[in-house]
Length: 72
Image (cartoon, rainbow, N blue to C red; front, side):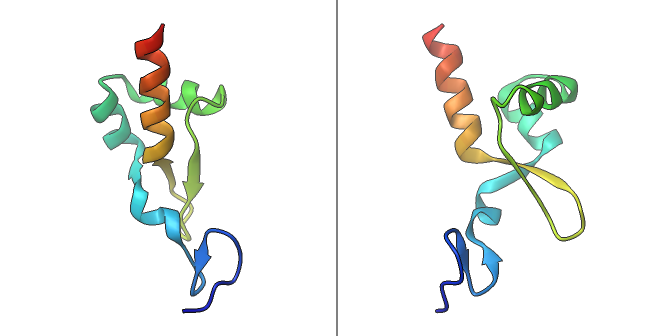
């Protein structure tokens, strides 16, 4: 196993297995796709880009976002 940089193993981003499409994130959070884009822009959701250029939402950031909403 070759650790290249933090978060990378063998040249692959280890977070890719813990991300979902924007549509799936919207479904899981019970909000619209537009709300997902707004939360990304506001920094409430974190994303990664795939090699093909698609944007995916990190599940960890969704959990943190949901916890903040419950607290309010």
